[in-house]
Length: 65
Image (cartoon, rainbow, N blue to C red; front, side, top):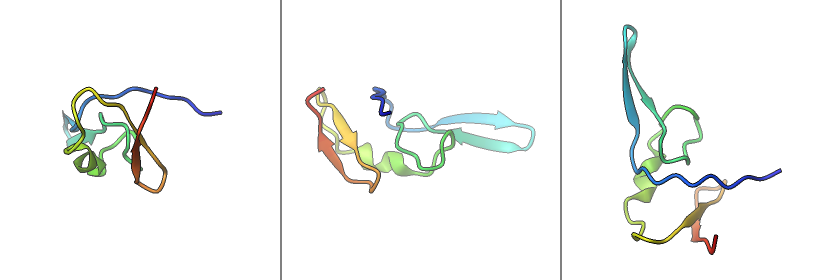
């Protein structure tokens, strides 16, 4: 089963813990969910008002959703 989840943030959320900082993915394309793996860098050139689909291989395409 597939699901479409719309995420609009282009960077991680920093959580400060007693064991050190943790970075939580907010872009939705990290391969290490729920933690950030730097994949949000791929969102920097997205155009405002467009929706993108990110494929498992890291490529993206504009979505008509």
